[in-house]
Image 1 (cartoon, helix red, strand yellow):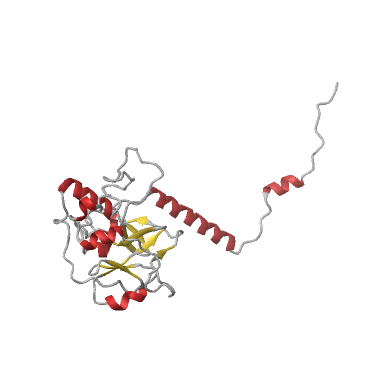
Image 2: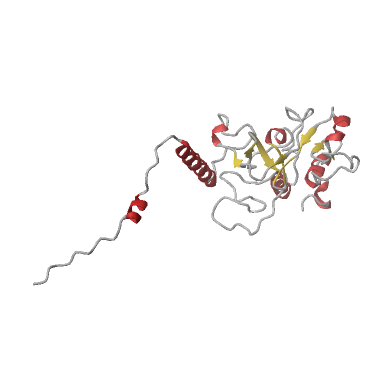
Length: 247
């Protein structure tokens, strides 16, 4: 892993801690309290916090960590204030764009001809190059030897409105790639990158939803019952077969 001893000197202390921290574990200080999962990261202290620790760090730069199916994500708006997020694939969930912090394990490597992550070869939408911040940082360290050109100065980073929540996204929520229609005039989406196309599976999902809704509306609409054609066929008795007369 690039965040090991060899590369730790090339990363800011807060970034190394962010990529190696285990979030959503119980806070040791508030072990007996309810809702004590550590889902806040303090950049000034390079440490993870639970909601009960928040009051001591209120004036610090804070990131809320969210989790989707056991993987940590952060809002793209927050990430883009700290590091250049160009060509990192973003997703839309709960009406907000998010990016994955770290690599996600894959059952098998994708060897197709489509676009893949430059670090872990996970399938991506064109024209993205990285599936997570980890993969982009790893690539930059391997190819350019550092991150100094890509780190941004951020002196103020409050928690997003309307405030802190548990950060958990249910598995049945829809996680979709960021639509290309939300980009700015330069096509960068405001983060130094470019927009992406909608997934084919998203279109299929929308079709299924529309189909279900249509069937519900038809079933609930006031209409007189119609006897199925099959029922009338079943009620017909078998007639005596007509034979040709014998001469």
